[in-house]
Figure 1 (cartoon, rainbow over the protein chains, first blue to last red):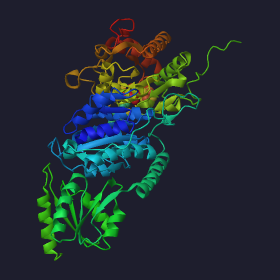
Figure 2 (tube, each protein chain N blue to C red; figure 1 turned 180 degrees about the vertical axis):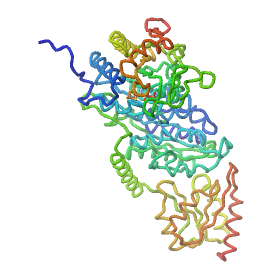
Figure 3 (cartoon, chains in turn blue, brown; figure 1 turned 90 degrees about the horizontal axis):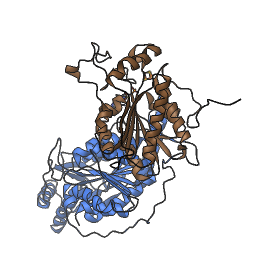
Amino acid sequence: MNGNSTIGEAAIRAGCQGYFGYPITPQNELTEYMATHLSRKKGCTFIQAESEIAAINMVYGASLAGARAMTSSSSPGISLKQEGISYLAACELPAVIVNMSRGGPGLGSISASQSDYFQATRGGGHGDYRTIVLAPSSGQELADLTHRAFDLADKYLIPVIILGDAMLGQMMEPVEFKYEAPEELPVRSNAMRGAKGHPSRVIKTFTSKPSELEEINWSLFRRYQLIKKQETSYEAFMVEDAELIVIAFGIAARIAKGAIKTARSNGLKVGMLRPITLWPFPSDKVRELAKKTKYFLVFEMNMGQMIEDVQLALEGKGEIFFHGRPGGVIPTPSEVSLIVSRLCYQKGLK
Amino acid sequence: MRKVYSRPKSLKRNPFHYCPGCGHSIIHRLIAEVIDEMNLRDIVVGIPPPGCSVFAHHYFDIDMAESAHGREAAVATGIKRTDPEVIVFTYQGDGDLAAIGTAETIHAANRGERITSIFVNNAVYGMTGGQMAPTTLSGQKTTTTPYGRDVSLEGYPIKMSEMLALARGAVYIERTAVSSPANIRKTKKAIRKAFQAQIDGLGYSLVEILSACPTNWRMSPLESWQWIEKVMTKEFPLGVIKDATGASDAN
Ligand SMILES: Cc1ncc(C[n+]2csc(CCOP(=O)(O)OP(=O)(O)O)c2C)c(N)n1
Ligand code: SF4
């Protein structure tokens, strides 16, 4: 199954009730999967919206009414969704937003890229907010993290971004779907469907009192702290004795893994840290690794975005190197191998 | 003694903050009366806009959720598709519905979404200080058309209702005004018909209401009500623009 369809199937099994999309390559298989399968499911809705702006606002409406709602797009379309994501964050509404990102800036290319890291992990739209960002690196993880995204969104009442890329979306891989939501999901208690049996309710963000908004910001901030504590996740690969640790996420980590295996077979002590949550970023783990390991190679398919989080985490400890390929160019494992072995040679590691 | 006038249940006990003579407060009351009379309070959700009516939830005693500027029809779509039993209405200004929100509005109408839009046309952007709206009349002075709207540069007053009537999914569209007791009564009837079209599951309905903004028009309340009747209705004639509620092609 291709990665895009995998997300669709996983979303349906996670109990997604509303999908709202707008065509853009390289994620169309997901929209088409939902058109084929979600639209036929009882009580569920599929709409091909008139724009990404409309799509995210339909998600906002569906989430208001208590649905597990989702949209997907790729980089230029995700830029348009930022207004809506900011409102979702402000109104504390759960939603899942998939970005199968492509090269940018501008219309860019339709090839895989990781150039939306800043946008995804810094909120992306206006205002003081965060979204949870999950970075899958395989077909299986696309399925597992899609399910997790819906659960996290509901648990913390927050928009969750799945940051994939063109390659993950197109790759055909066997997948096991481990979860099936009950036929009928309970309606979220704060679902807005009329003031029956309770006083009327208001969902709003606009206020004429800055102190009121400050309180909203504080309450969001406290939740973000809790998420940092409870939900940060990563994969640590052969880091125990590593003298050089590659830090990479998503498809780049998959490419790097091949290079690390080669390095190991040549006797080089190289490991990898792969953040699975990009926000919250596993800063504590990076710091912990720096107690034993001095050298870090950050490898991204962009000009260096996650590297800033690594720098912040390391607080000047260790030595950081960078290798990046922007614009939708797909680096090869042997290219990364070369960088790794050259670095090991320069630093006298064996 | 018979009680002939009281506060609708769907309005809170908060005094309106709108300027004297402003149409918003009258329109709020009319919607609340219709909700009461049609017994919809338990199942209605209103979507107010950024605009002078951004605090509508401060007055309506019904479920209400804020929308981003112009996106109300998309938000309403999401709610309605999630639970078709909910009666959803959007409340939108002319900057909101006729400028930034045109795409969302046209496509919701074209899909025949079972939602109702209350479209308040006051020919200016009220909240942001009286700038030109797409509905501003030719020659009308606003803060961004200080020499009067020049249609050769700024285009013509846009006729959303007439445009929306072309959408097959739109089943009821009427233009009214809150500028006289008779017109206020007609407005209430139109709102009722629009809600009924939604209840009957027929499609998209919209009531465009010409409404005074004495503050930004720099007129007294009385002058502004007269201006609606004498000037505004020339550009925006009142009446039912589309009624397909009985037609066989209503979807
Ligand atoms: C994206 C965005 N752009 C601009 C604004 C500023 N803004 C708030 S209300 C409004 C328009 C108000 O005019 P109208 O819709 O006619 O409503 P009125 O205030 O006249 O009732 C604008 C431009 C905003 N809130 N969001
Ligand atoms: S500025 Fe105009 S629209 Fe706004 S409250 Fe005052 S009169 Fe009403």
